Image (cartoon, rainbow, N blue to C red; front, top):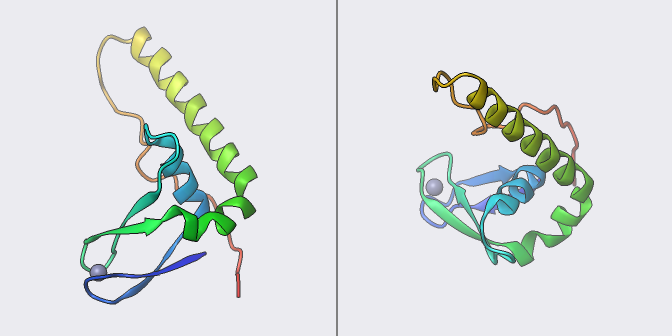
Amino acid sequence: MIHHTCFKCKRRFELDPVFVGFELSKLKKKNPSHYQAVCPACRSINKVSVEQMQADLDQVADEIQQMIADYEAQKAAAKTEKKAKTKTGKKADTKSPKSRSRKRLKA
Ligand SMILES: [Zn+2]
């Protein structure tokens, strides 16, 4: 886990490197230098340097790739579904792909 201290309220919170890597991959930027983390306590956007998290991201590179692949597959499926029905019933829930059970403790 990546630990970060909110610049505003000084609360410490954790970032899942898999989720961070996934979010970064979704950005249009090729080499984003910062990740925008939202503080769970005060909702401030904290810019976290990617460089600072690189080691953590590298460690879970496979999982990030897997998550991106899952996301792409889901997106493709949603697209097909959308084509099939012309109605826009439900949007694919891509907002919180956090449900993966990762219980890895890092010192
Ligand atoms: Zn905060």
